[in-house]
Image (tube, rainbow, N blue to C red; front, side, top):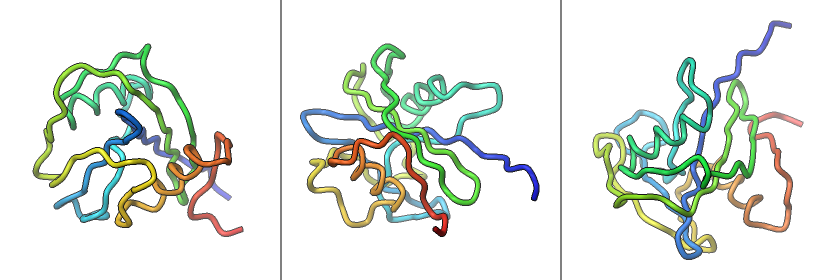
Length: 144
């Protein structure tokens, strides 16, 4: 059996008055038409906190501070991803869709009214984070 090389992705649970920010994927070739948390891959030489700060600026045009970011969950996603979920309530700037070629909707949803067309891994993570199960780790897509 060979060595596994995981890619690390960061996801931001941006909260405002009990609502979370979701973006609808568009024209990407992967899960188009599905809502997802804001996020992306950690780049070479970058740490996850720097990646989530960069992604917030690139995708939403907002500035978030390292002091306001809290790691809340980790998910291993089959076959080769680790998703790190970070929560943040404070940010500077006005939320703007900075990637209209990849996203056609950005808005806040009540945590109890998440759209049906949300990426399954994000749905599972949000259900655990905001539900009664306070686990900090889960796996997705692996057969048991």
